[in-house]
Image (cartoon, rainbow, N blue to C red; front, side, top):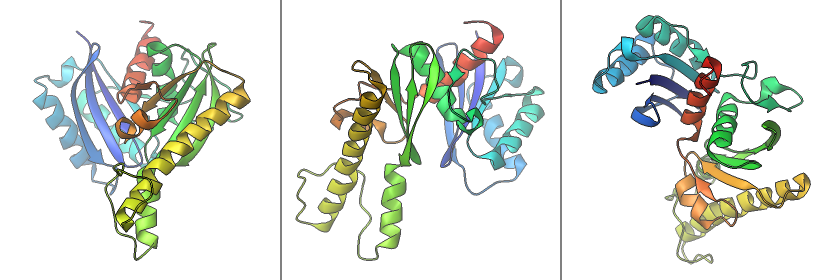
Length: 260
């Protein structure tokens, strides 16, 4: 039985998970800010491993996907301290089965690499992956296992919180779809704009990507954040896979070991 520790460091949260064979055995999330002392990150990881009923020697490897450089080293140090092993840090230099066609491959975030690798293992290419996090990203992946590029726009929660902060008379609202598009209360109008505006942005960009790519049959996958809420209202999203990034880390680990 293989127990792999995956640490997904995002702009909003750090997700720490143990993947046991093909299932997530345990998972915790902690905020990415503020930066905590090393001993606190160590305690989070140690407690999670303890709760799984495993000990540190039963972890076969550690993979870190980070888009927050200031947190990469602390979690690298945690891995060395607890497990006495050097973690795999996901980046464009890893010798994996994905060709990055970005003009500057170093600019492609680790999470986007993980998503592309996982999508190629789990779905039929060509692919568009929509990751709804702090930013909403669109990743375009060909049948030839090429990462072709993508689109980045503000995430729903990021846009909403910025709006609430800057407009003094606009109340904070829940990120839910209202019953009607023409709001007769301010909170309804806000929800309509935020929720349906996000859906139409996503669908419009998918449509534009397919037109420029000259593809009519594309598998579209949503992951992250509010994907389960947004995806059912999209005309183009076919699958929701909230574990995509974590399993991308698993597949990268297996590719590097020669298991797949």
